[in-house]
Amino acid sequence: MTAPERTPDGRFIIVNGRKWRASDPVLPEELAAALRSELGSARSRIGHTSEERERRGLRDRVQLAKEGLGERGTAWWEMEEAERIARAEDRLERLRKLN
Image (cartoon, rainbow, N blue to C red; front, side):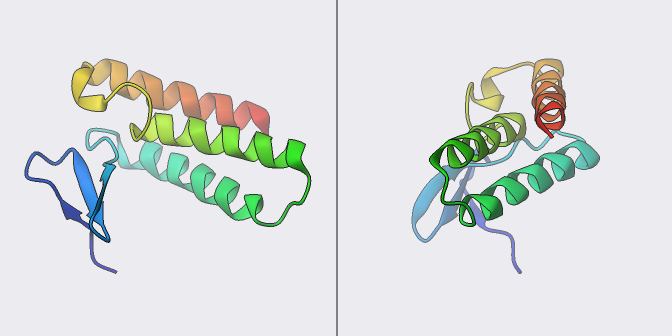
């Protein structure tokens, strides 16, 4: 699998002609991997539940993971590096408390 095309500034990836905010490149790989794992788990479970309350909870988990990765919320390039890492750690901690 090849990496998606990026805009010249590196802030966005391009998938099928559509721009999406890229994950924060300064996140330590272990932290980013844990957030991606949480994201993938929540996304896969969404399709396997018919209960709206559970689906809403899973969507909230997706939101937290994407915020942690810098793909949602305040743009990572508008924040100091320490703030970005703190946000990612906070979101991962919040996700783990939901387990």
